[in-house]
Image 1 (cartoon, rainbow, N blue to C red):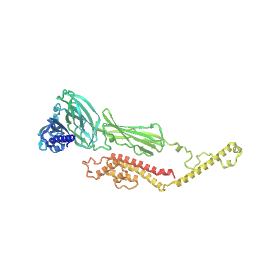
Image 2 (cartoon, helix red, strand yellow):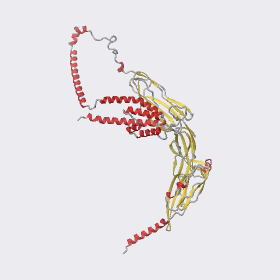
Image 3 (cartoon, one colour):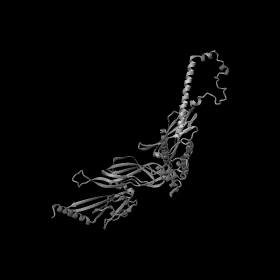
Image 4 (tube, one colour):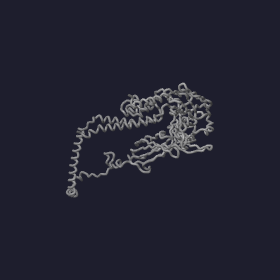
Length: 600
């Protein structure tokens, strides 16, 4: 006997099957393709909308092959289902953001096929860029760009200002950054929003600024920014006047031809193209004051430049000065925005310790730079400083002659032997006075305390000798380490010169020589050095150096364009790796010494 519950379940299964049957048997019967604008400017973005009366995936439309004449920037899809009087219909809509080719004329969008059904082809008219103003009024969105100059030097920073004009309220959107081969592109500052009236029509304007720094010289095409998004559009079909629908829009800026000039052949030293460069030098002691031998003097050197990034500011060093120890600290890099300009600053603190008296002369710092406004070479410099250094009191307080045998100039205060053997009345009186007896007792007391102190020191020294577990060879090892560290100063200077000149072969040789002096063992391959320090940034820089030297792209494309340009980056990563190495060595040494401080 069939229960009511079983009948209800059977009816549900039949209903689900009947509803699913049309979907299973349905096939696409219509494919409609349309564009949001026609004509289109050459190189501009436009939307291609494909509507299929079925639920399908994008893989069923082979757009990559059928639209190979266009650049597909983005794609999105949506699905809808309607049931009217028991009839179910499904619709899938695809929206492709395409960039038109640069050619002018007529181009055909081919028929797009889904199964056995195809859309109608579309004849697309491509216009030249000088007709952009005529089409602006009919477009809901367009982009205008401006650059400071179309002729710049390599590593010269310039601005690109992009303005997006919208004839309707923005619902959502994405502004794609410009593209330039072998260049660094970053957004500068915050976006700005305002309104502008063009031919009596009100537009909402979004402005964004980009900083572009080309890294290679030559003739390039700067592809402008592109926009794709949704704008709000009033719907007259809605019974509520406040309701609105969205409409997809696209826009792209015109490409810009850019000439990047190489570094002038007559230029020597670090290349620094900037709008303005200044050098300032501050001291913690007034040059009018006198220094003492061994008294530290702190210099603060600040390099400030406009129109460059902090990484482009070169390092400045004092030359070796006789009788002076120089200890530079790690520089500090900062940047800020002032009056719409990017200001970069490099602060370097240098400690100077004079080791001898006399006159200390510190030469001026000089930094050649290229003025991008006047196209001339200029030099930023500081004043030369002169200090007077006095000897320490400990070095001048000794009034005895330097020659012990020469006593003619020393005052004679020692009584003769005859005077000592003749006590006289005064001597007898002094020897018998109470003050002399007190002095004798005090002398004896201090002598006893001195003997006790010597005994305790001797006992402590013997105990330390018994507890010492350091082999005698440590002294030799320490001396050899000191020699290696002393040798590393000259080798490090050679390595700096090779890296700053971006000389790959000389850097390879100098780096191995410096590593030999530091590690105390031969380094035949730079990969051994990277494994020893185990510092990922240094490993990456060493691999890049070896790749430029021995890889397939080791030959530059032009004589004035060396293939390796990462000398400064290699120095920074090597300094960081060596700092970690010294810190780890000190920690390990402290761990080895601690057990000896607490004997069992």
